[in-house]
Amino acid sequence: MVRFLLEEDRDLPAEGFEGDGDGDLAVRSVNRKQDAGLSPVTVAAERDSPDTLRLLLDHGGDVGITDGKGRNALALASFCGNEDTLRYLLGLEAGRELIDEGDAGGRTALWLAARTGNVGVVRILLEAGADPSVGDDDGTTPAGAAERFGKTAALECLRSHGRGQVGA
Image (tube, rainbow, N blue to C red; front, side, top):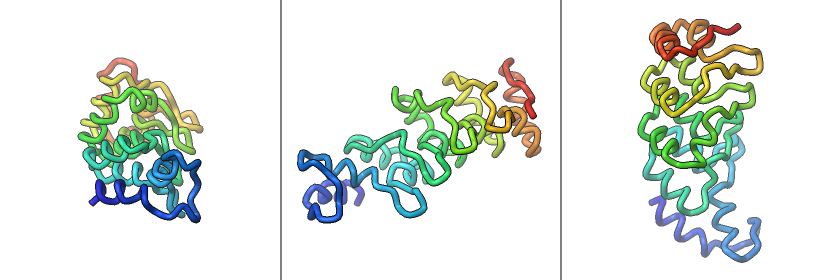
């Protein structure tokens, strides 16, 4: 269904869309956000659909596009515990570049995974090079978030990694 919509999108009337007439219309449509700030890319990351995400990115989707809270695909996959999507994104150079990028509150993918207590995601991010010392806008590190929200397994994972610091 997604493939069909992407292929048919090229033939949509240009009225009401932005584009330069050289294929830009389809790219802008793939990256178009709804009122809540959701885009096809962010929804695919949130719903753990790496195949759909791959298809969207192959058709010009922006891996760095953010939702209404400033969370990119990597952060959303981490927050939702979507390990398959996370691994796919970390296999992309553009995805790896997002690893320590914060959302509107400065919360990184690792911070969000620690806050939700998903040890598998925390491990994946640490192994991929996520910096556990990067805090949110209040200075709370991922270990501090895990501690604050009672996520002891995530806290232990961060500490055993050797660099986790309990922040504010």
